[in-house]
Length: 632
Image 1 (cartoon, one colour):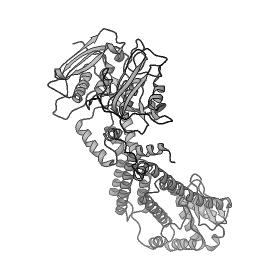
Image 2 (spheres, rainbow, N blue to C red):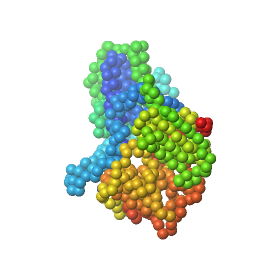
Image 3 (cartoon, rainbow, N blue to C red):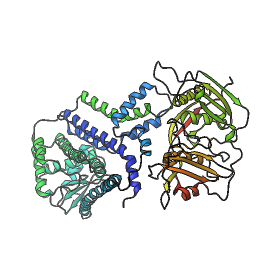
């Protein structure tokens, strides 16, 4: 049986893989169009284009975009720019799901029982695709390994050739070609064609008795061809494309690209040999004599002399037409395309980095979302228990926002809909100083705009600036326990719908509304999380609040359920008051009850779920600057 985590990995990475394949395919098409423009120029220019298209498969544009994002400094992006770059992202990454896709997926219903074979096939499709890719990958590696063993056996039987006319001719050609390190010549009893073996320390394999059939001019022509393979490092390029073929064996253009590389590689060496002084007829005859005596090299990363289409090669070699050098205009075109291919994604990441200011920048000529009247005063009382602070929005008073003894950390959480552990940096007083806030908008407004106004207020009065980052932090993975989850089906009785833009904060005591988790609450020593028709995302959000650490859903449960979880506080519930969690200034810890299980045991006993410590990516808000507000 294929492990489920393979399905999860592929499902999470499928959009990125699709975008990478799409972008790499476009690069092959562009390279093909450019080779048509350069069809009358030297083959080495076309070879470089095909090689760049091959390397693109190993370097996703997303890596360059990420590099640009890491190099970017925190700054504000105008709304017009963000729309432009959003359009660019949609075109360049057509397989990326919309931002709301994950939320919708998290709240999709489980299919009915007995969906049949079709559902099981669709459900297991990611795992099946992973298995098919891995089988193809192993087949390609096995074929190449079998061929490589044949070459290795021939090299083990070869003996170094220290003197003779072959060695003298090779050394003379090395001086003409500018190769400083001598190429070792190995005399092999095998009938493989002369070829360059190895990448770091290349050696020239030479079949025994082959020189007896060659005049000096033919011998030098063949040696010159192999010398140019070493000078151009063709074996390294061929090995890189072999890696591409192994990973992307399912892509037909990858194999077509490999044949183009071999064709232009051999043609480029042919041009170099002719330009070095070999007569065309002599060189063509030397290739034909090699074919009569030897067998073709069985591996692409062994550069021989008989590769590519021999008939076309002979015709090109015998042609009197010489390939022309690149003009200045064509060099400029290639340089501009190369710079754009590398620098473009980096610049995109620099400009479109996910960094923000304390308030969102509206379109030009639009008023800033701000309160009509706002007052912030320092509350001298000590903030040490949840009952000592509160923050409310009053629709009956025209959307007035009030906060009593609220620390700045709480205001940031509400303004940006994050939890305390997602706020990084800042002085200690953002957790300890309490403030009384009264703010009135101009006319009625919805909650979403209210939080934007609060962002503006924080930037104006607290001089708050911050930016977003993704960091690898300690998290909890929520998984099914050994005997599976025990989540009761929803009864949908006595629950009311919550507002769609309600922030992920604890609801008032006694509230249990549809799709929302109320709590923690309860008598002394007992805490509860309860709700009706909740989704796993709701439970995840509330567990993160209680534990003071991100919780990732690894249960694969997508249905609705009723929740009633009872537990006692302990050192793991860092998000609760008095336990030193993020945003907790201290105070009296919550009472514990030795007869009530802690949250880990309660999850497994009551819900059939378990929490596993791990590390994962977490989006955080990093405070760049903040000041205490002046009294008003």
